[in-house]
Image (cartoon, rainbow, N blue to C red):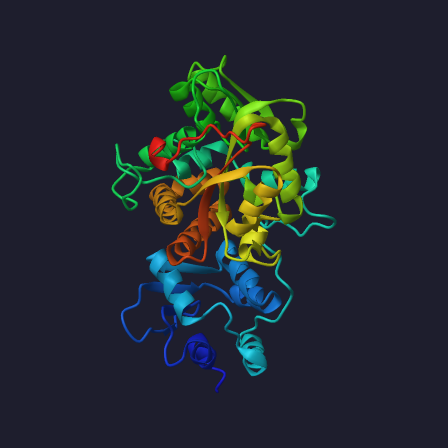
Length: 434
């Protein structure tokens, strides 16, 4: 190959090795050369500089590719969901170039001048932490990395409901037996999710609810305003706590809702009639799961109910520290198999009464969040910087695909603490909550 070869010509053999006869997307390189998909492409993967190759050489696999996207040296231009799906289909998760492919890749990178000094990771990246995971200090740092990026940014992405968990896209008066309805607005879908949880927990005026990982207070506000509950919400994110308190005051519910900047492990000695844990369990970790459910069990009165709403994965999955999600989104995150969750709750003394999957609803939720972000992209970049906005765009889109194809799940597990006679005080069928 002559020295005047284009970047596309230099990388042509590697693309064929990775994808076969032609790539699933159009590729465009920094010298303007292109490698075209065989058919109609959903978009173009742009390699804007040799820095993208350097990131992938020094951190092969998902982390290096993630660094290239976050830094802006690589980009996806087109239908993001379709492009990610095309790449996923063309290169299965267990595919590897092999030793010969790695040698070719290094040779091509060398000819293009991408084997120089190791590039610095983007500043948005969470550095690996030493020591045991899920200590209080390490949990606080992980939560701060993800949640303390600015309430205005979350308001832009999540919309006025300020609810960062799976919504429930059901039409008004739906009994819950129909499919997810994408025509339902995100705000209405989040309201429907909160209402479903309140009904599952059997909330009535005066009952005391603990909302673990209360976020910006949306569940607490709904439970107090709609069902008359007395609510304590806890979060270890300072920015969440500050805004949640303001929202409670603006709703005129300060006498009914208390927001605490506290760890759930700080609540010993108190008692509640119900506990909601919505989108928080992913941060607990398998080593702490027994402690978590034991702690919540001890906080509940007889016939008290716990609703655990969490992302799940078949067989369980610790988010690898060198993955894109592990470095940029959820440091120390962990997904549990729903069967393990049920077993852990039973071991803690709960009678598990209901398990419901909302997987398809989370795919719709994430697509709505991506639409919000893309619609107000300049504002998002102004609030948190382009790198952080890029992280959210690709992570939410990829997660939506995971919920669509079943790689990820979302389950609500309802448990109750039986009284001394084995009474649970629950209705005989789901019809009571719809």
